[in-house]
Length: 286
Ligand code: C2E
Ligand code: MG
Ligand code: MG
Ligand code: MG
Image (cartoon, rainbow, N blue to C red):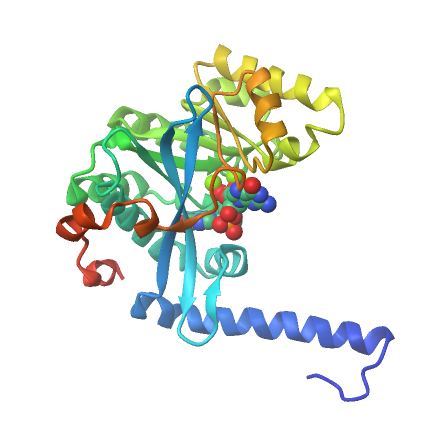
């Protein structure tokens, strides 16, 4: 599709579009193999309480370890997997792997796993979660599930039911990227959840003006009124952390504290040896 004479103007655009489409196609065709090969890995990023700056949990962030292309970030394949429906298999794998991994992390921490809106709309979700907990032996209160506002608003009645039943199982529910979606306050009051994750776009602006701090304080107040905690995402500087503490945030996550890294970074190798997951575990769920 690429044209040799494509200098400037429309043909460059065409080339670019062609490349994007080619890459997308490549991703889609490779994903099936990736599932069979067990290419996926979960990286973990610590979440810290602002009181005492202790690690309270770890967010699992999926990466695709492609045999030739190396590590591929989720934004490049999750949307494709969502469109093709493959996200259900990948998501199931992530739930099982995340629960197994959590068993190797300190008992007083949780693992947070991202759910795609597609998974959230899947009738089998609660059963999948129950199985992952059962097979790994992880106590339900050490699992947190992150869902976006968009997922909640797609089918409100279904969403309410799912959130209530997950919550009854003892699983914690966090609303991811809060403040960027379309959920309104009356929606929010209807759902059971335990945490609001304040989107990075708010944290980025904290140092620019006083308004952002005031808005974050308001989100914290709102969250408390609804019986939930708050976590600020994408904290990159000490100044941001200071302002977030002043705004009353409960916990933080971001490059300032730690970047996402393989599980082995967070478990001491001695104890991990004995409790290590057999390499083939991923393959059971394909
Ligand atoms: P998210 O759940 O909002 O995750 C936070 C993203 O922000 C992660 O990107 C993380 O690496 C990045 N991040 C963390 N701290 C900082 C910081 O201080 N500065 C900046 N600039 N970025 C920071 P990542 O790992 O590339 O993941 C992107 C998105 O992919 C996630 O956004 C989530 O929506 C999705 N995702 C990741 N893993 C899974 C998964 O297992 N299943 C599903 N369905 N989606 C996933
Ligand atoms: Mg998340
Ligand atoms: Mg987020
Ligand atoms: Mg985000």
